[in-house]
Length: 163
Ligand SMILES: [Zn+2]
Image (spheres, rainbow, N blue to C red):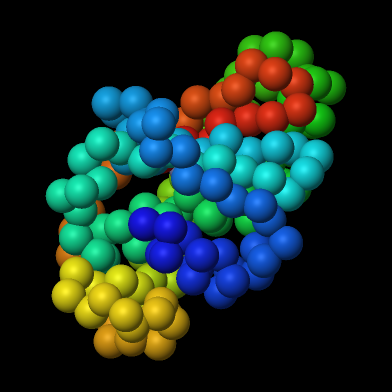
């Protein structure tokens, strides 16, 4: 998984981020992955489901790219949060719900396309082939289910962006 994370980190222009995979704390039952990200610093910690051992390479790539795209959207997410504070609570709740649905959809679609175009890193049997996303394009037709769980951190300066 780390190999996949590192490879896509570069490809997605997140080279300045300090990314860590926390294997001691898997994501919750209802999410394939959750990612904690700092809102001020380029730092994030990813948690993957215990089930990740059963994922095929395409699925693993898709999940990783999905999580990394939530880092890409951080500034927009944070801008929206500032806007919520200016809105009536009911309106804010609605806008927030709508935004989260929308951003999940966008992130998910983009993640699929990016893996499709960039290729799958770390196919099961090619150890030693350092992940360059120029491999064979795979998994385009695979229909994948995804819980798209979003949970937010309680602390002010950080948030979980899950699933
Ligand atoms: Zn997500």
